[in-house]
Length: 267
Image (cartoon, rainbow, N blue to C red; front, top):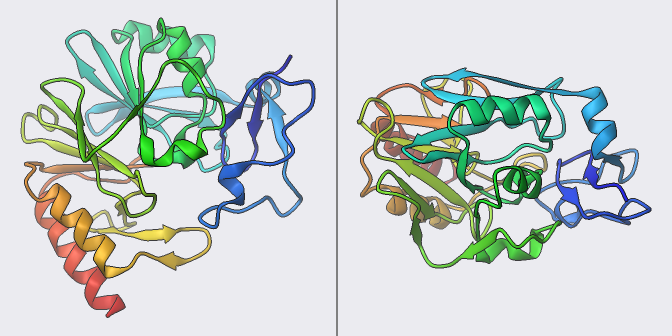
C-alpha cells in the first residue's frame, strides 16, 4: 500500500490503495486546493521526480527538495551534543539524505512550526529510531498521518535541551511555534521562525500573515502577542522558512522594528 503526499502542501497521508479524498490542510482557509483539483503523489512518484540536497545556510545545515515542491520550505538542523534537532520538515526522506543527516550526528528530535510544514515527519522519525516529533496540541486536528512518535505538547513553551526552546507564539495558527537556540549564531542566539514571522525579501525585516496565498493579514493583537512572546529571548539572528531568507545580525532590533512597522501599516 502506498503512502500519499499532497501535491499542494506536501503533507503525507497513511497507506491506502487509493489517494485520499481531500486534504484537511489545503481545505483550510489559510491554504488552497490546487486549481486542477486535489492531487496526490505516491512516495515513490515524488522520489522519482525530486532529490534532496543539503548545504550550509548561514551556519546551520539545511535540507530541501530540488526541484522545489509544494510550499518549497527547507528543513534546518540544529546540532546538539547527542544529535540534531530538525526544525520544520520536508515532504520526502531519501536514502542519500538520511545518510547525510546521519553523518552530521543523526536526529534526536523533530520540531515543527505549523501544519504547512508537517511533511514526512513520520518517515524521518522512523528512520532515526522513532525520535520524538514535537507538534503543538492546538494544531492536532491538522495531523494527516498520525504516528506514535508525535508529542502534542501544550502550554506556552517546551524545552528540548539546554539550548533549544520551543515557543508557542500563535498567529498564523493557534499552535504556531518558533524555536530559540541560545547557542547558535556564535552564542548570540537565533530564532527560527518558519513563516510565523516571515523574513522579507530585503532580509531587514519580518512580516506577519494569517494566510499568505489568500492575502489575509494578521490582526494587531495577534502580532503584539507574538512580540511579547519573543521579547524575553536573546537572539541576534533569524532563520526564515526558505533558503537564504535569514536576518544575519541585529535580528532582535529588526524584529521589534518590524512589529512597529506592521502595526502602523494596518492601523
